[in-house]
Length: 143
Image 1 (spheres, one colour):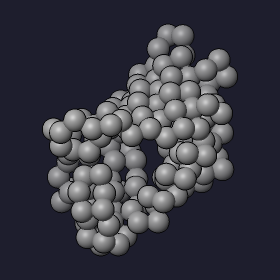
Image 2 (image 1 turned 90 degrees about the horizontal axis):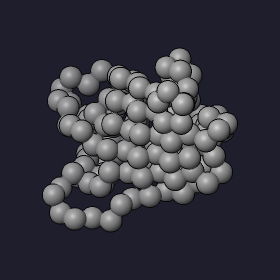
Image 3 (image 1 turned 90 degrees about the vertical axis):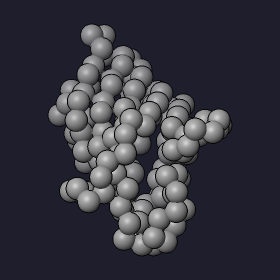
C-alpha cells in the first residue's frame, strides 16, 4: 500500500464512511488497541472483523469526533506489513468516559500512536496493532 492509498483510507476514516473503510479489511481482520493510559496490567482490547470495527467506531463517533493525521509510513519490501505514525485528536461532543479518562463536552485529547498493519495477498488488513506513543498538548490541536 502506498502513502497515497493509505491517505485515501484515512480520509474515509476521518469522514466516517464505514462502507468504504471496511473494503480495506479481510473478513477475519483483528484490531488490537492499546490499553488505557495507566501502568496497571490490563486485558488487551480487541475488535474482531469489519463488523466489530464498525460497531466500535459508530459508538465512539456518537460521543467523540476523532481525526487522524499521517506522519511516517513505512512498508515492508514484500508489501505484507505497513507501519504508520498517526497523530490523533479526540474532541468530546458530550460529557463522556474515554480510554484516557473522563472528558467534558468540548475537551480535546491529542496523542500520537504507532500502528502496525499486516496485509494479506489482496492487500487487505488482517491484523492491526495500535500502540500509544505520547500524549500531545491539546492547546495545539489543529484538526
